[in-house]
Image (cartoon, rainbow, N blue to C red; front, top):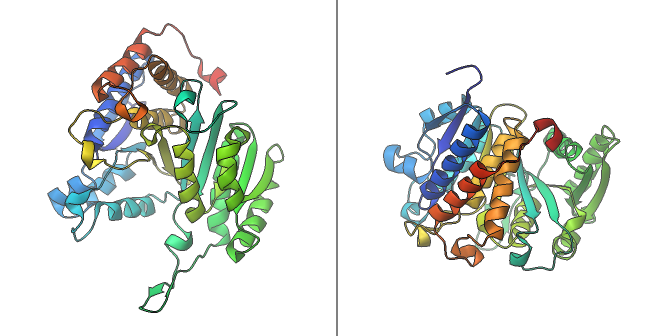
Length: 360
């Protein structure tokens, strides 16, 4: 393996997970051959697969492999098979985020011309924004928490450092995009939101080229539906980001088309589809591979600085959708393999050349 060869850890997932991971890796192979990109895959068990093999959703060897890789590709995990397991597959996901220090989750929402007919909303212009969600703190992790027969309570807590580090991720991303950050909170009610405004406003001073504004979370929930084309980077805390990113995914037309990236200050980033493992369609060959394939494109652009290769993949996806080669979630009648092969065909037959420095 040469010093230029990138090491990618592959966690194939459960139920439809292996099916769409296979599709993503086929596309990675095709685009890499076209662009002389060298990489090495190491597949390791995770989630339900790892529980079956070791009793633990995140075995020590799997974590070690991920830590020593340049990027991690993860497919959908979990399902009813492990509902009564001592440690569920989802516990492994929380653990790997913690161990890799993946404190920010980036989820793009893109509605291109090809996808407009499938969106449940009326889209005037192309939609292209990302939600940067704080991932490892807030109410999901706050203590104390308790539940009795008469009451229950949770605690939302953030430190200045936790807010500052994810804010920097959002502003750095905005500098590579349209230079606009909207911070979403509930500062008219919550002390934590007031604190977020103080810290993020201070971070914004270091980015004079970026337009910075705020929105209450309830107003943003409406704006994502009514005027999504107005946003660039949306920054928010864990709970609000969880809710808004799912709403944003829905306006694209299918959850099966949305990738995501989780990252920290150092070490490998993790790329995965946003949807679940869909046990009801596992083995039928009809799972939409696009979310996994777009996750591969996100990896190439963000971990390996190859926006040219990411653009080739995303353009091929758009062309495939425009040609009505789609799985049933988008109203099509094609299989996972047919859609994947069509995307690969478009990539390999394209005569257009891409220059990395001109794509950004």
